[in-house]
Length: 110
Image (tube, rainbow, N blue to C red; front, side):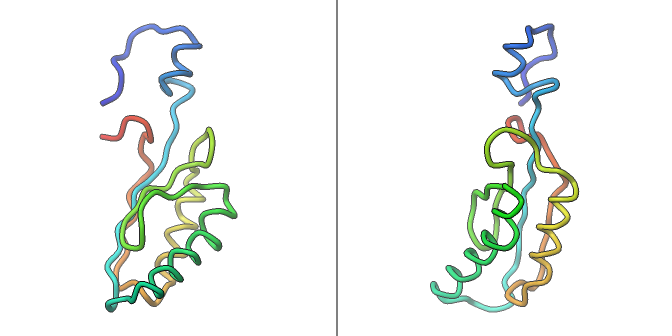
């Protein structure tokens, strides 16, 4: 839940990640087309990180079938970056279905 909307100093807004310091990320879920071995899962997550996450300076929390993507360090994921990750996920033959949520507040998700 987001902190209440009351007047705060710039320093406190920055510390709480609210106002002009709000940061955005997004969730994803995916259904596998077939059961994957441990090695296949490792390969898929490494490709995701190498090809879609790290080149855009993003960070991933999660694993093969679900996760949360945010900016590595301070800042927000852009809509273009979200769409690029979504496109990458949907192009992978290992996935039968992919659901990518819209951008949301990374510190106070609803």
